[in-house]
Image 1 (cartoon, rainbow, N blue to C red):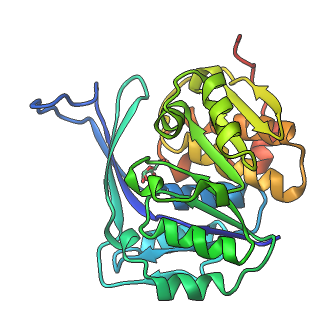
Image 2 (cartoon, rainbow, N blue to C red):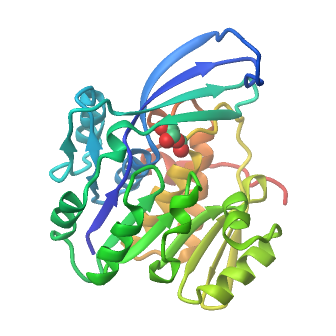
Length: 299
Ligand code: RIB
């Protein structure tokens, strides 16, 4: 099974602030760091650091040298990546003293994908290969249609949720990784049980991973559910915690690990990510994850 991640690549401008700025307020930041990021790229790096081989497709701007270098340093295959005359995607991220974040995105090159490019990229993949998607690029619905025609297995992380997700045919998706807010946006239900019940009813083919923040994660497939808690770590910056989870989860699936083991390893990896700054700089390598001895938080 080959893995294709068709997703965003962003330059993250990360401002350290006492608290997240309120409407009409002006505040000073104590630090500015510029990191490689983007949900797509973060997930590709997590897949690679988690031990999987991954192709990353998407659009870079002419200022995207740092993003290209990040892929190369992490052994992410970029033979299908393209550069366009645009700025690369970027994100303005505030991180508060409590480790909470708030993000403004500029799509830039991430929104320059066209059908001809998508056709070309997907022609390199076949039945049973995995296509991983997030919602920071354009033409998500077209990607899903085409990948389904090629009988690829499609995994969707519908984040950040907007009307583009509503245009996607979720009956063609095999894996859905979402949080409670996205669960509400998709199903209209607020409680985890009800969200999962609706998903099972509407899309019985789905293998769903519902992340619940400090309450851990629930996996649902074929009327079975497994849960996993979170680990106790000091929270420094939650940026890319979900992306790390997703990448590590699919690295485990690609290896043939059980869903329970995938949840365990992905939970350790994302806990390590929240304990340090930045998106990609905070994503751990597999050796560190397997060697980590973290205490499970009390349920
Ligand atoms: O999930 C974290 C990512 O969201 C950041 O790296 C930022 O680029 C935004 O896409």
